[in-house]
Image: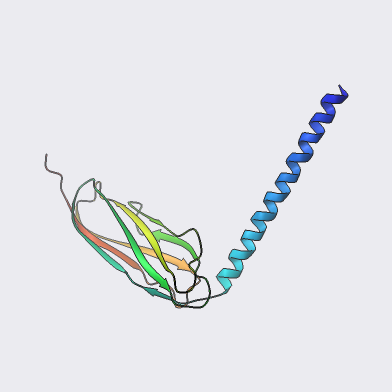
Length: 145
């Protein structure tokens, strides 16, 4: 009985140490992100509008909007949101260092979106002035049966 209790105690102790370590890592990452957000930088947008032309209803459109960190601090993309659920933006996971080029990847699902399309992507970052609104345009054609 004592061996079972001792084994249980050791497992609990080891698990709690790991939790504290993970909490410290998360706190350190959170503090680094907060500092990066406070340190503003500048950004040059290389691609602000993309016209995908004509696609057939149901096709996926993928594109990478390019931007360059023209400041002297890391550029942190906090969030990227689209004007519609049919467009999914993907922000960079890591800060973009000064002089580097970064990407905001989008995937547009044209299913059920027949007609002229105009979608916008809003990017939140530590850039001043702020990112301009990114635009996605094109025509979705009816699928021929």
